[in-house]
Image 1 (tube, rainbow, N blue to C red):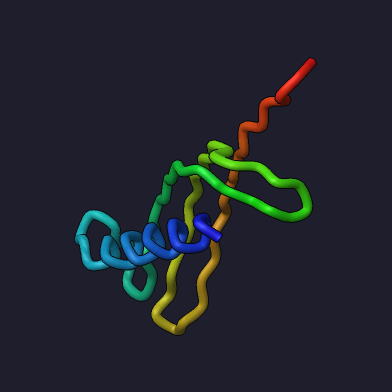
Image 2 (cartoon, rainbow, N blue to C red):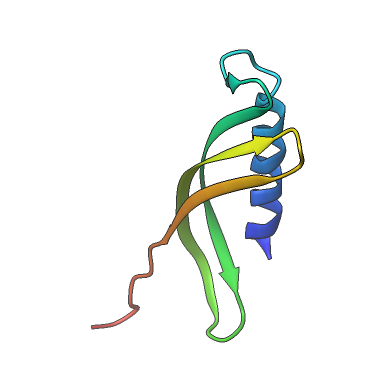
Length: 82
């Protein structure tokens, strides 16, 4: 799916921002924000092309390897007929 590649790309971006001193909140953890937009093509269960999606969220990465995140994703689906 296209969304998997997009999320992976933005995930790498978020990890890159960890080295920013503005992103460091306290020793041993990093807080981050993420936002994304894109389009999804789907063949199952219903064939749809170019459905716009967007999302945003916040999270924390800890030096012990644990992490948490709160993400919200929205897809805008418009009917073809009324």
